[in-house]
Structures are given as C-alpha cells and as structure tokens.
Length: 404
Image 1: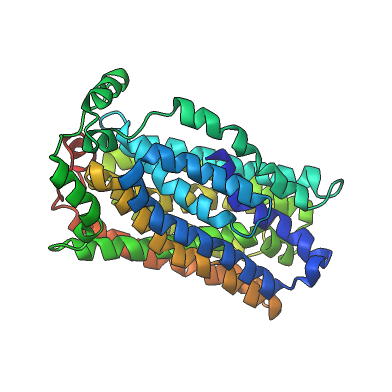
Image 2 (image 1 turned 120 degrees about the vertical axis):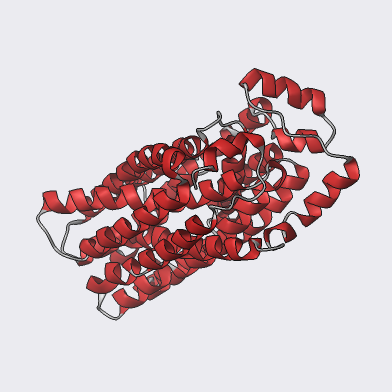
C-alpha cells in the first residue's frame, strides 16, 4: 500500500517539473488528460479485480496486481490497472481478518500506508529530479517487485475464499490463528452460483438504491482525491508559492491523511462509517475551497493538513461502509465495483484542473474541486439514513454496523 500511494501521488509531484521544463512539450491541459488516462486504467482494474478476486482468491490477485503495477511503472503507460486492482482487494483482505468491532479502524490503518507513499512521492521528487531526472521517480515504483515473492509466501488467503473452495480445515486453522470468526460453509453449487451472482446481488430488491448511492458518493470522492492529488503542487504554485513549498504541501496533505485515517476509523466504529464520511465530506469542501485563498504560510499549512485529514478518510469510509455491510463471500466484488464506478470521478478529476490552468484561471481550480464535496456528502448521508435497515451481513459484522 505504501508503493500504491507513491505511484498515485508521484505523477502530481513530478508534474510541475514537466511543465516548467517543457518536457515532451507538455501543456497544462495535456497534463490533465494524461492524469485522466492513468486513472482510466485504475477504473478497469477496480471494476474487474473484485469479481476476479472472489473467483480465484484475493491473495493471488494481490500478488498479480503488485507485480503488474511495479513492472508497468517502468513504462508508465499501463500502471493504472495494477493500482486499481490492489486497493479493493487489500481492503477486502484486512476486513476478513479484522477484530470484532474494529473493521473501519483496521481499514483506516491500512490506508495510512497509502498516504505514507504520498509523502514519499514528494521526497522522491525532491531528491531525484534535479540530479537524475524525472524518470528516476517512476523507476522507484518498480521496487515492489522485490516484495511480490514475500506476499506469495507469507500472506494468508481470504477465509471466505478458502471455505467456498472446500478448504475448510485450512480456513479453520487460519481463523484460530488470527482469532476471527470462520465464515459459514456453503454447498459447491451454491458457492459457485453466488460467485456469479455477487454483482447481481448488489441490485436485487431495494439494494440497487443503496448501491447507486455508494457509487455516486464514490464518484465525487475520487474526483476530489485525484483532482487534488494531481494538481496540488501545480495549483499552489499558481497561487504564488515556490516549488519547494508546493511539494511540502504534498507532505503535509498526506500527513493529514494518515491522521485522518486513524481518527475516522475509530469514529466510524463508534458512530457508523456513513455518518462520519458525510461529515468529513462537508469539512473537505470547506478546506478545498480555502486552498484557493492566498493566506499566510502557517495558516495555509494548517488548512492543507486539515484538508488531508478529512478528504482522504472521507473516501476510505465509503469503502469501509461497503466492506462491512457486505457478506464475506461478495465483499471484494462490492468494494471493487464501488471503487471502480468511483474511478469515473478519478478519470474526470485531473481534467478540469488542466483546463483551468490552460485558460489562465488556475486560481479557480480548488473551487471547482470543492463542489464535489457537498454532492458526496448528500449521497452518503442518504445512504446512512437508509442503512438503519441493515442488509444481510456476517455475524462478525453485525456489531460494526448496528448503529448505522
């Protein structure tokens, strides 16, 4: 997840250098298109990963995704597919093994590594671009190849996948080792049917409304996350800050993301992930809007930090909501499709920043992104009200979402 975050943020950290040095003759609007192309690859990865993971196993898919995005970072063109597949699969895995009553917190802890990667991206840009060149920043992202064999050797497989495959004794041993509840076993035909029907189950009965609300909230959330992540250093330079300070904002933003994951995870386990997500999106909109106002450096740093606190964990709490509310055997599919449909927002997110900069209106970039906050707040807020009638969940999840 550390390198997942590095790969996500490194484009934004390198972008001011590419624009300033006229590398490839890149213009601001073309840079926005480039960012959208990368997130389109992530959309494909996220949409397919959940379904594939529920079929072949989450451990296998995680190893494949890490290998793919590491190799692809060397050539950049296909890096998005591996990145998009890793996130929902990793969230599903940690939720399988989360202690009772701590599902949202554990997901938040996982995502702190993602934002540590964002911090690393700024330092990689500072340390490598001038002496070595911008390509070196992407070669650093190949390093996870060293960890793929470690994942393959030591990472336990999903309990629900093992049970569905009839490997009950292996699943029971893992459940005892990690002190978690063993998912109920199902017959072979039933398990196979559920794998094929896991996507359709998101729309049966009244579930289609809840599913649509999650997807719409995720669209706005990822538009904000990827729009701000791509353009934060460049837009801050447009506000008159030096490049060194603009990269420092990336570090502060991701430090806020780490703090926000820990705070939001605990709060979500107590008050409900949808409610926390809705509140966080409202605060995010205020923070992103204020980034477009030139303020004293100390105040600006505080606003960047708080925006990182709320923005990053608001989106993660959508994933936590879906993961906790899903049955174990369809969890990866539900999270994957929520992430995947949200990736349409991620694809669109970098584009308006590029268009505004190309038109000489960079000062309105943050205002444009801030609009997405209230929309996601409304959608996840309605989902929070509807979730007072709980859907079918595993016994281990009931305690987590009973207050929703």
